[in-house]
Length: 315
Image (cartoon, rainbow, N blue to C red; front, side, top):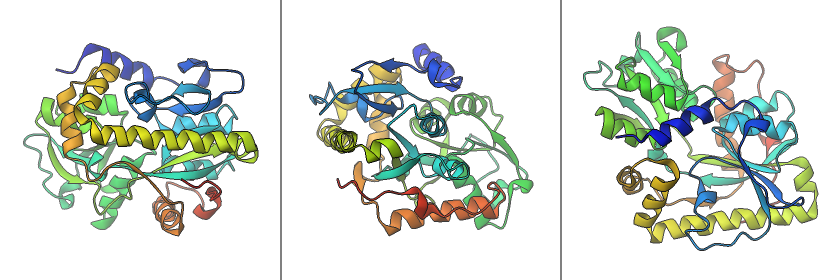
């Protein structure tokens, strides 16, 4: 059963709207200001026996869209996000650049259907209630799935929900399909008998970008601190590969979700976590996302994704 403390955290996190409401760990006045999301690599530093290369001040966020808002307000030096939030920030000339690419697990993005759902292929999305998370990879996944079948949002009943609300709606039988990511896939599989209709393979790049503020990039000291911080994250992922059971146990302590679900997530992943190269392939992938959002009128104007990137960091 999903533990109460996880739902309590999820409901609180889903309601965060400003940096002033975000939890943080004070390190020092000169600390690197870093966004993190519940259960990301930063939470395993101690368990992995890794001492941070420098002082860090953490701010917890429920999603990349809020990370971009905080960075736009110059409240952060560094933060993770999918390919999607920076595209919308580009319309506002946000003062940050994407500096690194984490190659995430493509099996961690999925389309789920409940028992008895009439949706057994993407052709069957038409006329159905489809859940997704707005302005995220699940939003793009849904758009791409519809576009592949010559459909649009006008052909379905789109239901934008937070992951927590989507899980509740899915369990209650209110969705015919759910485009979702992360541990919610395992929660739905084990607690709601969900079927994985499709994963992100062939639809998504799996690219998770780290964004740094223009001021931090231009500051030699912070530039060096950012690189050291990112390299520490790779050490955590390497530790996870060597210690999946311990990683799952620590994950349970962090989120309240049973360790068995994290082990299922680990055992079904497409590949180990690793840093990728900020190259033309990464930029082209994001450009494809931006183009589809523009073609489907989610964006008001076309975006040149190459302007969002900075290649001065080597990992």
